[in-house]
Length: 353
Image (cartoon, rainbow, N blue to C red; front, side, top):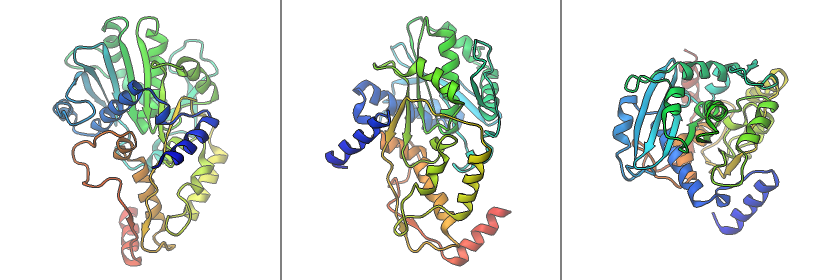
């Protein structure tokens, strides 16, 4: 991307109260790369995360160790890594292990509930899905330290820097966890959320309270990283924009009519959500379609596009961080192959089963 385009993007983002990576300090950018690397490693086998952290070619450079967890409860996973010979910790929460679109089906955002801790938050609500996830995280107890996360954070030295991160659903949960840790430990620890591609966690009152805590102008600011053509951070506060997100056909894929109807329905029935103001906009790479978009393959192509944009490897690329183990030789893909009518039909039947 050339400088003039970057300048335009930065200007547009700033008008919307957003930052780009060019507005970050070198420390913030490095921390973002580390946070996304840890969030990516969270998708691996839990027992293998510590081994993967020894890879010096990653943004973590072999300088971080798991010191709490990984703990798993239901579909949620969480661990804490510490930078060697430092007072920096990162609480990392795994995202959804299904497809990106499943977040809209499984997030349980049709209802909102009061905060799960009673500290003068009567007007602040989070989604039922976030509340359930919070219950899982709060119940986790590390077998090595015999501590819950709250007890572990309480025991680390005062004035430590505790970052809270996660990708996708993990990013939404990191928003809630950072709020909780801030309310309990901010007088003694620096609590700093670095969320990645997180869905919207709560209502406008929650977002406002979050901004008060984390919307700062120094290196202790909380940051919400999002690909500007990723649908997940737009759920459930900016649903309408999903319908025109990926450009026009050709060479890109339009939003299928069935998705249009679903999105319009969700807009009508969902509670009011709002993302915090701490956003860092990352310019997503539109991936063109190789072939012709037809009525029978538009849905699968649209889902392929949205899953590329939401993929943790895409976020590593946009942040300029090395890809983690198992990544394809080329990422993101240079194009998406359009399936023919027979393969589209078989794929539809297979997925229905």
